[in-house]
Every structure is written in structure tokens, then in C-alpha cells.
Length: 303
Image (cartoon, rainbow, N blue to C red; front, side, top):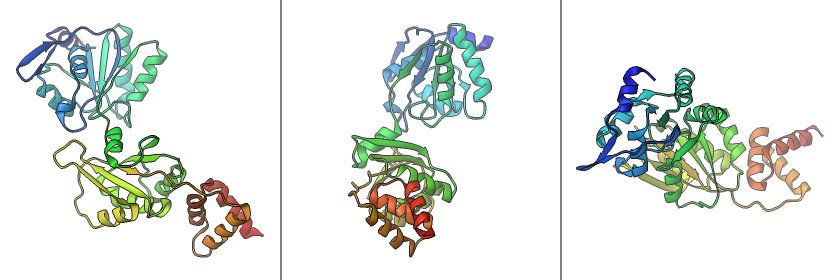
């Protein structure tokens, strides 16, 4: 920590809600993972505000984004950048601050830190060094999307961002598509239509889904339908904007099939599909692992 940052941390530590200025209590030394709003700034928690105001060091994924939050609640302090491109060097400095007995708070641009951002490296290193790690819970776009999607919420799998290239994306969908729970992933606006088309192809066009866009913001949208319907809708849209979470219903319960029936299904599908695609479709229908079915189809073709 630099001398200027030390002076900043030693100054007045408070936050303001409307006209009420509230002093922030001192924090124990350690790493604080502070959740921030995903859109609506009013979703910040009181504990998060107090932690951000009281921490000796505040690290942010994008200091400009965090500045908006600080100004909203009259928290007068500096931030340092901690993101993908400087995680190694910035992380070493933050670990050194923890070694000196300081409190370090880290926030992402939106939502809960460490969810699809580089903060997990810092948390892992802090734990290995024997420092305490304090989660300050709050908003999460994944949970927000799941809760309002209308899809089963008793079991779910979060896949982060899917691969950008088509083949890798389809392979990933085939890999996770049979997990018995609602599937959620982040998607960028310019890849949304393509990923929905791939999901429809790999998982089945009739599978229910929901596109959750601009959560908690002015133009919040939940568009529900089958994967085929959503793929067609977004393929026809121009200038899709905003942050997006895609939620896909769990796979239908597969009926157990006899080995000879599975072989017959594989051969039938292979008449009109490439081997890999036939194996993917058979996996969707039977619930058996795609890799196993792919090899079985190769063996059948060889006989």
C-alpha cells in the first residue's frame, strides 16, 4: 500500500444513505469479498456499504464502475484495480497488505466476486497464506435469473461463459446438457442467437428455456419459450444489448433402453446425421454418456 493510500485509509470512514451519514466500524484484518448490485444500486446491503467504507484497501475490477457506487453513497476513498490483466502483480501487492495485518475488500463490476472473475486466485492465495476470508453476500445475476425464470430451482448448474467457437460450444453443451438440473450460463449479446441455435440443436429444440436480460435494470426482460422458439426470435433481432443469463430446463427423464434398442437408435440416427451428431442426439434421448455412445456407434459401423 502506498503512502497516499495509507492516508486515504486512515481518513474519515463513513457512508451516507440519503441525508444520514453513518460511521463505518473498524474491520478485522483479512480479505473481504463484497457483493455489489447487478444493476439497481439500491440493492446494495448495509453490511456491504460498511465494509467498502471501512476497509484499509478497496480493490475493484473496474475502478470507474465502482466509482459510481461510491459516489451514490458518499464514500470518499480511492480504489485500486484488480482484474484479469494485472491479477498477478496486483494480487501480490494485496497479499502483502494482508501480511501487514490490513483489511482488504474486493468488488467486481457487478454481483458476487469470484463468480466468473479473477478474484478466486486472490482468495485462494489468501487462504493458503493463512489469512481469513470474509464473504459479504448480496446480489448474484445467476440466482436472480434462476429465481424468476420459472424453471426448476431445486438443482442447477452454472456454466459461466460458453466457448466462443461453434464446435467447442456445441461440445460443451453436449457435455453439460445431461446434468439433472437447470442449466445457466452467461452470454454476450452478439453471440446469443448462435448459442441458442446450438443449444436447440444439441439439447433439443423443445426444451424449455428463458433468456434473462438486463436484470434489475430499466429494460429488464425475461423471455420464455422453447429453445427453438427463442433461437428463432433472437436470430431475427438486431442490436441486442445488455448483460444476459440464459437458463435452460433440466433434461427430460430418460427411459432406460435395452442395449439392442440403443444400438438400433444409433444406427437409425446415423442414417441422416454425422456420427458425432448422432451420438449427441442419442445421448439426449437415452441419458447415456455421449462419449460412450459415440464409441459404440463407431464399433457398430465397423462391424
